[in-house]
Image (cartoon, rainbow, N blue to C red; front, side, top):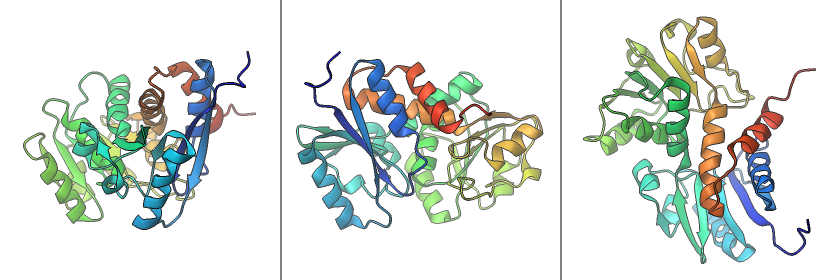
Length: 285
């Protein structure tokens, strides 16, 4: 099959540090499974200010990008630099997927849609609450909006920066039972679910956002981090018999949704999952 004529679909990821990202493997494998060719470029820019981000984004269309993903620490910073936002991205106040259309940059949030689907797959159609949500940054906000869509789930938000948490709670007031907790212990007291939406536990960090003694066997525990797949938080949770969801599910589902937005084609879930596992959880031995 000659691939020589069609130009490869140019995709990428803006963030830092991103060397461990599974996104290039997932998107390139998905394209290949559909008979397309994709090139997914890691665009690792540490410490970029608004002006640097602006010039980087301005270059995407002329260079020929179909779209890019955005990760830590730029999911919120790109917001005012885009030409338009999906309703979801506006609700979340963060963007993890930018689609280039006719020279215009449109922001989407597939962390929100991806987390929602991953959660249902892992824990059933109505995840039990109350849910302690740690982190009110880019991922935490997407998780909050996703959880708000489930009927009657109380969200207890906790963040090292209480003002950030208050802002997220205020934006969801009227759409969700959400309250800000000043301490982890308060958020976890009587909670049925726990979600880590912070980078705590992501290598090289070996910490956990939740001291093991606050976890209970009846809880479900989800982590957005997938490097390592089994974070200290999830290891602690599994040890006491709590149900767990690794960052694998969110990573795959947000990528599936992003790929569909980039290409207009439905992404083959199997190909993406295999690619993720090849990169992140290679078989032992």
